[in-house]
Image (cartoon, one colour):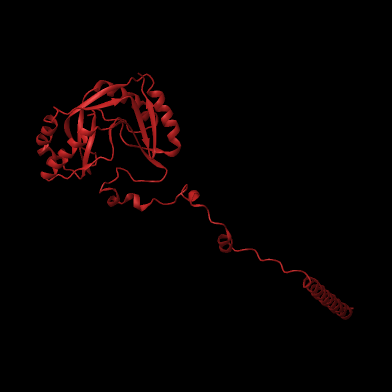
Length: 280
């Protein structure tokens, strides 16, 4: 019986092995048939790699690329491109340097006087560069994000409600420098209209405070900057101020007085200028 059991078990193993071998042969036959059927079909395209996909994309227009830059343009930080001037804060796209001011449009005699002042300063070793434009500042230069511009100017317009237009005058030269002492300025200080200027400062400061920006100086000296030079040359300029002031006082038609029509306040942010007419 034991021999019969043993023999029976061995036969089952052989039958199982034969069935497995048959199944294997049947599978190989099926695979060959599938392969023969597949050979009649068109070859499937391989999926593109990431690199190939990137190469096949159309390039974005330049105007779109400049909307979302990754890096700061190094040229904007090159002081040699700005007459040696150094920025008070790092330039970044999307950040707009902004300030509030009254423009001054000089008359012909002002240009002649300024030429004489610059020549006299140069003879004393101080080389000055004329301002690109003349204005009287009513705010510090602050940074606005692009999406702040509209609400900022709307707030400023609201703050200026009720502010009246006026005329101020300036006749005394004075030396100024920026907080970083990287530039020195020759300005003409306001002698009349000081109280009205302070009223405007309070209005502008309300908007600055709303946007958590720097307010104006606590004890301001309102002035129109005439010219500037690189570095802190306050001492050198102070030494020749008496001579320069004499050119203003002894002007051919009498002491020169700079008169500024304060009827339209302006806000410059980047390359945009917003105008706010004051009430008459």
